[in-house]
Length: 131
Image 1 (cartoon, rainbow, N blue to C red):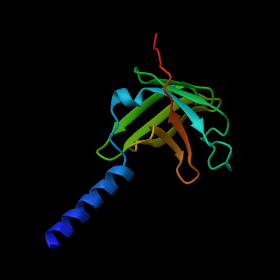
Image 2 (image 1 turned 90 degrees about the vertical axis):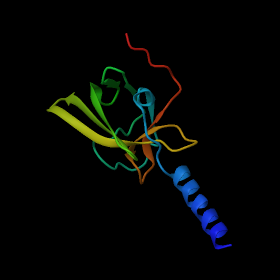
Image 3 (image 1 turned 180 degrees about the vertical axis):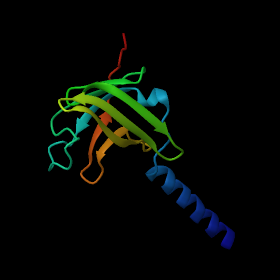
């Protein structure tokens, strides 16, 4: 009887981890078009866009955005997290923004700008073509 209870508890715990945890991202899953969502909340940080914006991550390691302009990105793939570093030019020189991806089961991949305010870029189904 104890084995059954332990087994059910273990399966429940593993299921909970799978449903709440982030799945690893792959390069093909990272590339694409992301749309800024929930940007009308209070301003949390200067680096985050608080206007409607579209971020396009291209396969050659570059990106384009109405807010950030054009720049480069680097993705660090971990076991449980996938981090992204954006580097771009602005009027004072070079700038950067470091954040991470959220890739939960049954959700679209997101680039988190502020977790507490649910401010993120959400991946869309739009196709990105690189010329």
